[in-house]
Length: 196
Image (tube, rainbow, N blue to C red; front, side, top):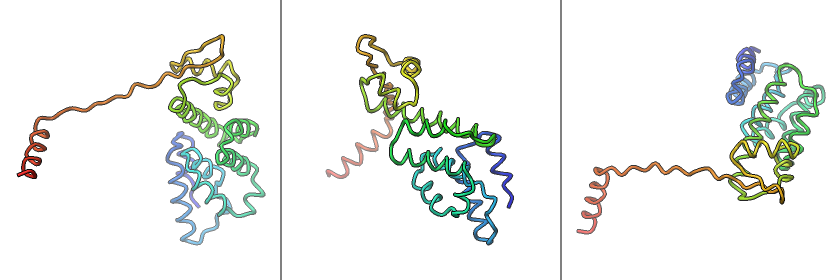
């Protein structure tokens, strides 16, 4: 089985294309009846988690042969990350990912996943809160309180030192609506036509 495209995407850090690439290659292998003993299940599973596609990750896990699950500790470690995501164990995602010794092919991918996940969580916090406790931010972001505070401040939030509360800086909503006179004219004609 030719996995050169998967290895090329990994080495080029094109992580967002890995899930669809692996899906396509696995389907091609299955349609030909080729053996998938050397299939990079850990990469494939992490690719779905990278895209926040938990349903596809669960389906892949369920369809993965038991022999592969038992023989590959990296695959089991990626699945533990997926379980943390599924259970919304925010701190568990970080501790699970950082608590395993990843191989050279996976180490950069896991680091990119954690950065992407941290960005997603920070955006979620930004949209959900107006003020939040420093300890809660640290919990959600998988950091200690000092690093979480610095991260938040670098992203425009402000800190009340006495209460240890962070005030969220809401992003400016851009309304880029231009009124085109020809569209307004057509709308007026349509309304006029409907009324008369």
